[in-house]
Structure formats: C-alpha cells, structure tokens
Image 1 (cartoon, rainbow, N blue to C red):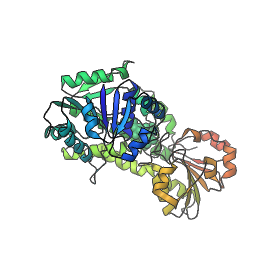
Image 2: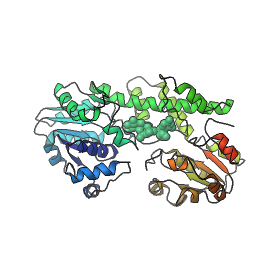
Image 3: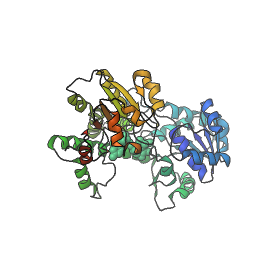
Image 4: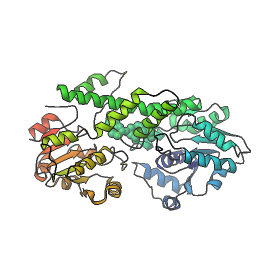
Length: 434
Ligand code: UGA
C-alpha cells in the first residue's frame, strides 16, 4: 500500500519505519528540512532500540522515503497517517493546532479517495474536527479514522510489529477494509484488531494511559504507607500481583511516572472531563500524588544529613524518565536535582543516553560524569533515579572506594535490602525498610 506519514516525531518515525518493514511504500513528511536531510542520509533522529536496523534496511529497499513536500506525498498515498504533536496548552488541554492545520491543507490537496488516520493522542471528538477541517476544502470522498498508538519508548518497534491489540475507530466499511488489510501482517499471532467508533477509539487511548498511571500511583501510595507501618512493598506486590485480575505488571513503586505520555494524557483527560461536566476525581488525586512522589526521596536525604545539604556532593545515576530512552520529559531526576541545588548541594550525574539532553536544559548547573563510578567520586551520597540495567549489578566494593560515604537513596528499588546491609551500606529505598 502507498502511505504518507505526516510528522516524524517519535510516533511518526516508528510508525513509518514499521509500516515499510512489511512491504508498504512509505513516505514520511516533516516541515523540518534539516531533519529530513539527516533521515535521507540514514540518520535516525531519536534513540530507540532496534529502530536503526529496520530504518536502514527499508531506506536501502527504497520503501522508506522522506520529504518536506506534503502535497506530492499526499497525492501519491492512499493512506495518510497524522502523527503530529498535541502538546498541552496553557490550561492542560491538548493543543490541536498542528493536527487541524494539516487537516486544512489536506482538503485542498486530495484529488481522490483517502483514508486519513489520527495516530496522535487526541481528545474525544478530534476525528470529527479533522473531518470538518478536511471537508471545508475537499471535493472528493475521504474517511477520517482514529487509530491510537500504544507504543512504549524503548520497546516501540516490538510493540508496533507485534501489538497486543490494534484499535481502529471508524464506522466506514471502506476504511475498515483497507485498515484490516494494512494491519493483517502485524496481528498474525492472533491478537485482535478491535473495531469501534471514532470517539471510543480516541477515549481508549486516554483510558489506557490513565489506568496505568493510576495503577502505578496506587502502588506508590501503598509503598509510602509500607514505610510508615514497616511493611515490605515487594511482598505486597507479589501478594496482590498473582491475582490475575490485578496482574503482575505495572506494580513497581518508585519516584513517580514521567515521560511525554502519562503526565500529558492524564492532565488532558482530566481537562476533557471538566469540559464535559464530569470532573474525574480519581485523576486529580493521581496527578497530585505523582507530583509529590517525584521528590519524595528528598526528605529522606535531608533527614540523613540533619537538614543540611549545603556543599554536600550528591551523585545521581539516571536522568532519563525511564531506562532505554534518552527522553527526559517530566523525568523525576530533574525535579530532584532542582531541589538539591536549591538546598546548596552540588550534583554530579551519569546517564547512559540522556546526558546530552540534560546538558541542554541544565548546562553547567551540574557536573556530567563519564561513567557511573566516576559520578560517585567523593560523593556524600548516591541517588538512583532511573533503573538502567547497568545500575542493577554494580561492583559494590569499587563503588564503596569511590563514595565518600556508603550511602544510597534508591528511587527504583534495585537492590536487595539484606545484600546492602551485608555490604555495609546505608540504603534507603521505596516502601521497604530493614
Ligand atoms: C506509555 C504507555 O505504556 C504506552 O502504551 C503508550 O503508547 C505511551 O505511553 C504513549 O502514550 O505514547 P511510555 O511513556 O513509553 O509508554 O512509558 P512506560 O514504559 O509506560 O512508563 C511510563 C512511566 O511509568 C515511567 O516513568 C515509568 O518509570 C513508570 N512506571 C512504569 C513505574 O513507575 N512503575 C511501573 O511499574 C511501570
């Protein structure tokens, strides 16, 4: 099939590349000419495991192309994916100006039937708005479909190629048939394509992210409570997770969820609720608890140093909002660093992928170490903010030689309590006490 993907951010790029992988002709459109040039020469502009290999292969096979020319790309395509940014506006609702701006242009360009697909996370009712914006100028038939993505950063390629499910919101039999054909190769292992109306598909995306954010937040509150009463959240997690109604995944407590999706989507759904006359009470609590959770490690550090962090040297392992990404949006590490600096501490950080991005935001407010042990050099304490695999099994005796004090504040529960005691560390984690 001939496909145009408009917007080559994270979602667009993964979508375009993975659609080319099953033999489709894909052309990706972006207004950023220098980015388009880079991609043409084979450079993947984001860090995402396994993407580079299929990106290169499909460029070589001439199935994956890039352009700034929306008109020519759209004219050649039968299916047009919109993977444009929907950043939160000042009031927290999703800003649709990019999506509707392109929809407006599409109406002027299209000369034959097209399926236009909303891939971006957009509030309920957006497909209707996109339809109206295209229809204002279009002289031919077209359908607008909601087809939300459920890609996790770090696993996006796998999630696209082998999805748990594909959700397609359309009531047009013509569009349904085309999309069924398009997604057939990806659901061979028997996972479903779930067809529904546009609005339900749009809400499915928000409901999925809000539910997962709530699940994590609930566990974070249980962990905080465990600390108060001396229970062990790992035990509680094992105890409840084996109930299949609850499930084992997404029950890991920590220093809060971050990233570009959960915070933005929970806020946008909450805003939609207010607009629709149904203010979600649960989402308000989730947002509040998560914000507090991000810096919940701070009072513990302060207590340890008797309230005085002035000139204390703190090492930070992990800056990305989660492992296997260089994404630092809403990363708890950044909130912690800001508070540490406010209290007069100096910070030396290490992250395997995200240091470039952080240096653009924090500049020389912190020091950047070449590796995890160098970050710990002469530090009064080590804070772990992201669970990168490399941090899971450090050489504790090497680490002890670097640190001034054998003190670890672990925001991701990486180590065994007994093991840390044996190693002679002061070890503080989330929801567990010795
Ligand atoms: C999330 C969803 O998982 C995807 O399905 C969705 O497509 C995507 O948002 C999106 O809307 O585009 P992502 O933001 O990449 O994907 O990250 P997750 O792996 O879901 O993690 C989100 C946050 O939850 C991270 O900050 C992570 O550290 C935190 N988390 C996750 C926990 O604190 N505990 C857990 O048990 C699991």
